[in-house]
Structure formats: structure tokens, C-alpha cells
Image 1 (cartoon, rainbow, N blue to C red):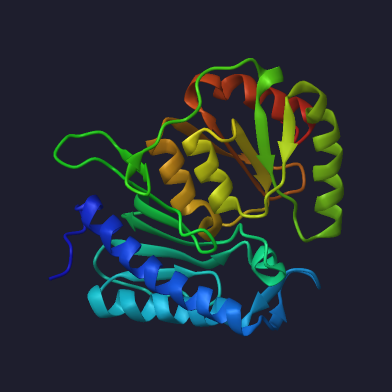
Image 2: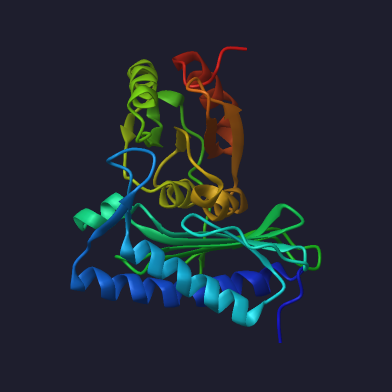
Length: 273
């Protein structure tokens, strides 16, 4: 029986089941070798045959269990639905890492109800680590776990002692803007990490292994699940107008969000007001 649209825990459970199946496919394909199927925004923004196969599997499994739901995926066409639930799918977040064999790529699946993310799963394919989040049911609070263990963001720390994750666009001009902003932010924080997967970076905020994340040019499928997990673990997220003309995603523990936001804006990541 299909889960009730309001049952965020049930939607998270289905997302995890589907993500495990997709991760198994991606893992198997990685052992067979990786081929680039196409490029997108630039010659270095690649799509592999495994990206496409993973998304096809995810869509098929979701349609089988919940045929009336909508689906938004990175690689395929949008599918409309009538249930009020929409699945937001990234079949491999961190495709370049997957291509090179760096163990930082994930299957990301989120469920929205009437446009609001209520459940999400990010599964690191290489390590098997499973991040799950969903809104509370029956009046309870939001839940975020890593391999079944509750998550919480890192405690308060001065800005100078915060480790910040980021990423870069595949478009050369936006990369230049991001690099210049990074040069201005770097002296104000502990250090910067560029790990190559938006979804996993957000989960690292949730588990406290980084203190924040900022990147312009990410898409909904990159962050829908990870941002929900981060918020459920005590983070705050905000979409700002980026200096390069695209959406700028900022995520940090709620207790230190305002200070990091000020630093990011001052560094030139955001468009001038």
C-alpha cells in the first residue's frame, strides 16, 4: 500500500529503499568502468551512462509504488502527478568524483508535499553511509540520522574556527567570481573544503564535520534532500541571489548562521543589493 502523502517517515523509508537499489546499480557499474555519455553546461560538466541508468531505475521504482506522484530528475523529463507529492532526484550527485573514483558521490532523493520538502535521503555510494531526514509526525520534531544514529550540527564556534565547504560552477566566468569571493572569505575562517558533492556537503553540516556550506549555481535536485537533513539536524538554509546571477545556497548551524551570512555577503558571493 502506498504511503500517505502526509506520512513523512513513510516517504523517507521509501526513498531509502529506492536509494539503496540505485546505489547498488551505481556501485556495480563503477566496477565495470565509467564512460562519459554527454556534457551539459560545459565540456567539463559530464553525464555518464550510469547517471542515466540510475535515474531510470529510481523513476521506475517510484512509479511502481506511487504512480500518482510527480518526479523531477536531473537527467530525465519532468513527470506530472496528482497526489501532491513530488520526488526530486539526483541519480549521482558528484558525477566527476564518480568518474575519477573519488569516494564522495551519492544518490539523493527528496519528497516534497505541496512544494515543501518533507523527507530526504542521501546515500554515499562509495562508503554506504546513509543520511536520512524527515519532518516529524504526530506533532514531533524533525528527525535526521546517519546510519540510524541521530545527527546534530557542531556546537558554536568563532567564525575564525569554522571549516566551510564550497563548490565551483562548471562555467568559467562564474568560477572566476566564486574564486575571487573565496579569496576574501578564506582569511576569516579556519579553512575551506571542496569535496565535490553538494548533497554530501550539506550532510556534513548536519553531522558537524563542517561548519557551513556556500555555493552558487546548484540546482534543486542537488540540495533538496541534503538541505532537509541539515535543517532537521539544527542547521538553517537560505537561497540568496548570487553575484554571478544564479541562486546562492548557504547552509550553517542556526546558532552561527547570521555571522557566516554576513561574511559570505561581504566576501562578494551574493549580488549587491
